[in-house]
Length: 482
Image 1 (cartoon, rainbow, N blue to C red):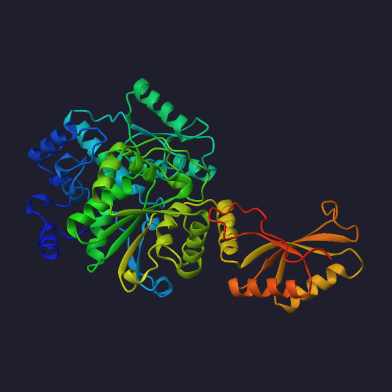
Image 2 (image 1 turned 45 degrees about the vertical axis):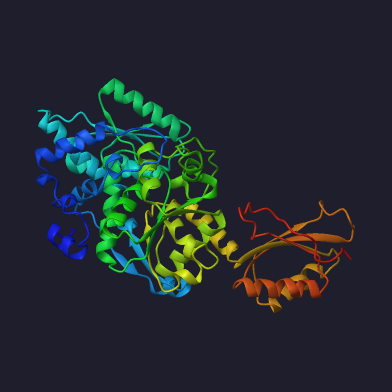
């Protein structure tokens, strides 16, 4: 549980006293509730830059009241700190019961709705609905059961079976509808009209953002000398809430967002000065694949966030791999993406940030086993510990043996090898060998390349340095066919 208001005043003396509230929902008085309702009704939904905090969808008061007994550790990582040259703290939201930060906003929203119903004399709760393919559905299902509120989740046909089953185990009414989350959302809204349910948006409802913002309060409480927080961006609700909390408590702390190139909806919104529909392509950070950021969330993020970085699929895979190997954390792509700016070669790998205190929320660990295998392989390939190439060898007896002997001498482990005759047209006496090797890294890979070139083997290598890393075999022949 968070410390009380007096403790926050001692830690952050510049915090406006009028914004400090007690940590329990039960202590909200009627006057404050009326003030909040008035503030919500006066929100202007336009594309003009926000100049006053009073016009934002939520403020620090909302986040402070949302402080619940849902808390996650924030500890310094020795190995990542050494790797990045700064003090790296990991906020482990994947330790929540349903595996992601989504529990914070879900519980906050359900508690507020429950109070509103009871104050209106409604004790047979009508229930809520949401469209989600994973973490938001799990969080609503679990906390709906805990609070006695019926939950209906509409999930697209592509939703992972494991997550669908868990929602059902939590007692939710699971409806499978739609080829993607957009179609699921339309159906969920139809259920609202038909059954009198309340729709809970997973990233744009103000109570959702306020709940997510409690992460920011905890970060400031757990890391006193904070220099920067790096937050994943999908629908922008998480970064909207966290940035509000952090900037209120520590105005000099930098708050950065990070999103994948293949799902850059927040970057597109900044360019257009309003949320816009964005083309989404498949990404390892599938939890961040939101085609249009929320209007409330965009208002918050635009007001508080200092800068936003774009990251490649290669960088996301490496971030997942680093967390697995160094922290023993199995993390989904969207949960690991916050690490990418500070890894070697990232935009924050500069002298300015060396030795600084940086917090990275690890937002979720709900990754499918099959996806995990692909992420690990792609991370190893990006690290050049798994390489793929095509070599031209003699089709006479001993041709393949000489190639594998050379690889053995260079201490390369052959993971896969495939013999192709039909697609080499230059010489009837040669064949192509498609090889996948396990190596120790870039220097080892370069050594193997040079050894093959010295022995006269024409090769084509997979271009792992391609910024968007399509995974296709690319490159030019090292030597002419002989």
